[in-house]
Image 1 (spheres, helix red, strand yellow):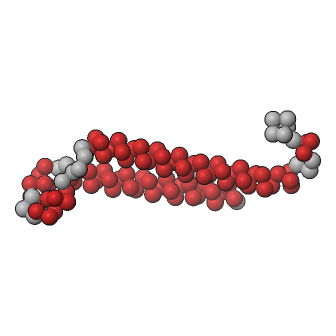
Image 2: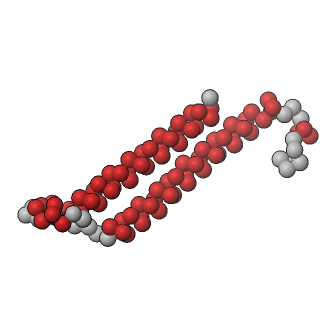
Image 3: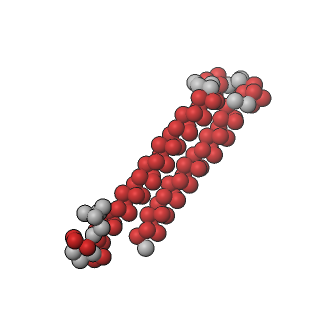
Length: 105
């Protein structure tokens, strides 16, 4: 059951990342679409807001690096929680320290 809860957390966070990527793709498409930019250029504030501060490629590179870092963090936390749970339950599994495998001792 503990494993299921941890796995659900991982899935929820990974889904959030997927949704952010999807939104960023749509926003990038919108910002770099010349036809849309021409129609909206009449509004100076909106034009300034939509003016990209970096290229589409640079934006993607930054986004991908952020996603990799976030996914690493999610899975690192997942593994830490599994190890904590395993160590907490170890006395119920192994009654004596000498019963442990040499590598674990």
